[in-house]
Length: 192
Image 1 (cartoon, one colour):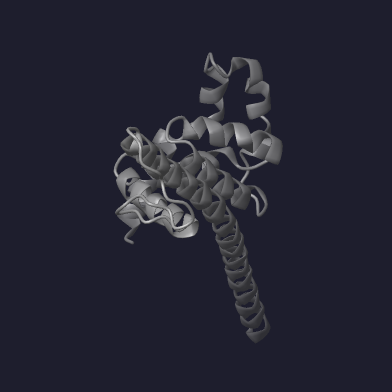
Image 2 (cartoon, rainbow, N blue to C red):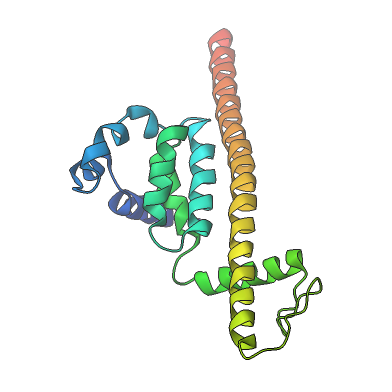
């Protein structure tokens, strides 16, 4: 990525992410604003960032509306990073939701062993009656909801592990560069 693209992304993120002051002035959050203003919820640390990623992915898949607020509320007791949790919920948005709904349906039907095309279960056939279509509709909706639950749990676990590993890799890289610079400065000093 070019530096101009990175700068635009950073400007967009700063402009659209909720701030501590914005949350404090929200009339719905006023009763608990003092908890959101805790500095530990806004620091980027090796523990708070992976927690924020995991909570954001969980909230993004488990709740179709209001997922940012759910992620922010879940960040309170877990001491996760609120901005990261809010930003990661955008993995499910109006543009990607059809893809995720199809993936959840396929995953749920695979795990529950339900044929998506016919709506029949390998475990138990839906018996005849005048409400067959309604039963099949609820069954397919249930399969999709189950798939979203599995996606929420699995993506939260994978997101936590990947972001934790990524954080350690990034810090290790920064340390390596710092040590290399110190050695170069020390080598230049000894040459003089």
